[in-house]
Amino acid sequence: MLKGRKFLSIFVLGMTSFLLLLSVSIPISFKTRAHVPFTLGKTMEQFTAVKQLNKWFLPFAEMDSSQFASEEFPATSIKGGKNEITILTAKPGSISLGFSDAGVERDYRFLVTRDPKKHNSCIVTMSLDNTIWKRMIDPDPIDEMVMHSLKNLEKFTSNTELFYGYPIYTSAITDSSFLYLTAVIDPFQKAKGTRLLFDSLFQYSRQNNISNTGKRIFSSQAMNNSELRIFTGIAINSKSKINPATGITIKKMSAGKKLLVADYKGKYKDITAVYKALEQYKRDYQLASMEIPFEEFLTPGNGYEPEDSVSVKVCYPIF
Image (cartoon, rainbow, N blue to C red; front, side, top):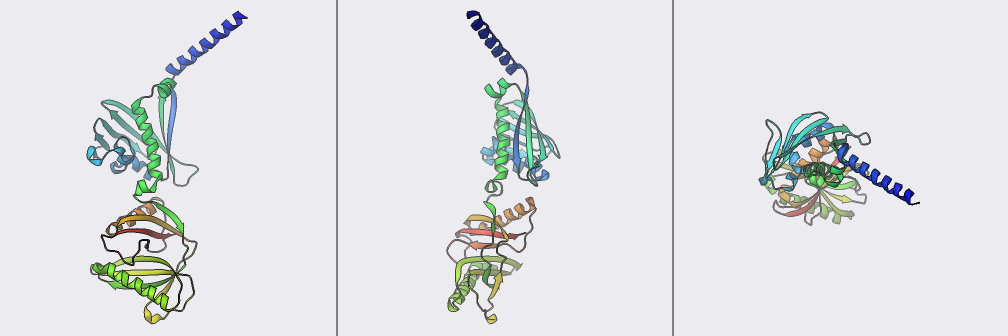
């Protein structure tokens, strides 16, 4: 009985020693993956363009831009404090990157492949050859930094507010009929002219017993340096006959069709940046728009001055 127990103890000890030896001596390939919702070219850009790389690669993504220096030529690189990244090679589907921390350098290779489960999306994979002991018990801090950076890439590209600066999403058109009024004004009179048009629409609605929801939409289009055409609309939920002499018309939208929407809160003078972000989103996701974009006013008031703090939805009807 004692011999059996002794044999079992020796066997267990031997197996433990054997497994420990394997864990510290035989390298294994460990893979880290990031899912990126972009095409191959756009995914590669996250590595090759400094303005994108420093937004997700650690530790630079956590630094103020004044704390590091970057350059595009002769190679994409970022340097700050004790850390430096350099893109060594970049070709479709493969990136080699050098990363150093306090003078200790490592090279890493990233493979970019199309995601078979998601249209126009990619998977970025990085492999590390290491022993189980080094990976699980005593990990290399530089390896850890790069692995966390890759997961940060997935978080950054999958969050529209992080990537584009604003929450962007698709929504369905719910209001299909609008009382609509347009005018050509001096660009410097935009707020005043907008208020006048909205006031006219609401007044017409009251006088003619036309039920409206209170929803206000606005768009504008520069004709030249001295003329701006503005468009205003209020959503209505009752049928009505319009007197053409007033200049007011009824505009129809296809209920159920999609809108690309960005939520904006800030100074009204800075809203042009939201339009640029939506245009970039459309290009990145290969979307086509049906009509010119418009704003849905959420903040009280029928016309905003440049310095007004507002809440506005910027909308693009899309296919």
